[in-house]
Length: 356
Image (cartoon, rainbow, N blue to C red; front, side, top):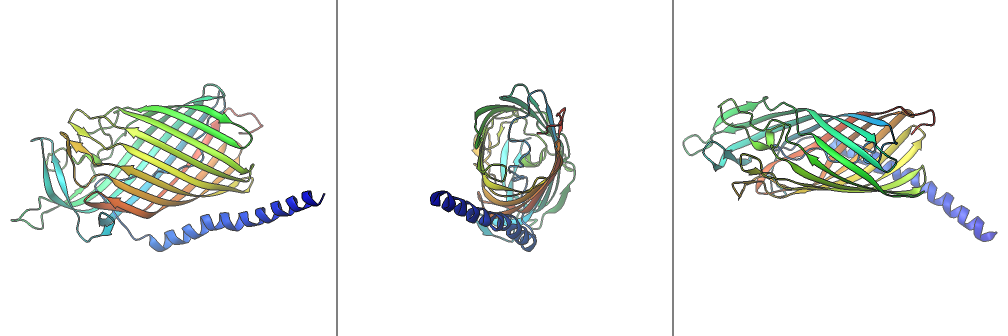
């Protein structure tokens, strides 16, 4: 009897710590976001990468889950390796004459806006097919072009012409393990070259590869998602990893493979309110053109991401996240993000009154 009382006291004590700890995961990063929202940047660069809690698991058998999201990443800070610098010079890939022009232009800023539609369908209780459609890609980019000894300032260049439909992804996800506390889902997929990758700038040259809506290549995708219910329906820990293996496109350009790792905690404050905090890491080696590494591409990024998810009814979820860079290392020099946001809505169609 005394042992049971002691266990009960321990559980109450542990749960008493959960609320303040979960609050710290969300509130402190939120305050930090307001403090550091001043700016970094790059020609292209990393987009938001995180676990939203609406797309990682499986859809109910015979049900569709539709997700509509918007992402914004502001990039206007120069960096060499891990150090801040005032001026960033990057090369130009000259596709017309097949060579790389070093230190061709000085970067100013890149604003990335992405709207994406995801549709998942539960084929069976253990297998889900997901379609990801980035239907709006906008990269507003500014730099000074044609830097050389005779023209050290160059010509100011602004591109609003990189909007367009992106590369579609099709992913199959399979339930590898489900228990009261554990969920393990594995996924395999393909990225199709549906996005434009031959857009030209105002000078008539093919635009920078990292500014294009698409990559022009078929790429392989592999992912894993694991969730552990520390306290079922109240506190959970989650981990995910993914790998994108890229292939060379028809212009002999090869984007570096992308590795993503995520880990975090989610706390169910109320039946309709979930708060989360997570750490997101991304690694990408140099891109290559004609087998030669392209300076200023690739690097390592680690973000701290607080988030909130609302569920007004059993079939609808609203979510919002803010991303705060805590570590960034670029190859050579480039612009890096100062902050990013993502928000969206997820809807399950055909659920019975029992909910999801």
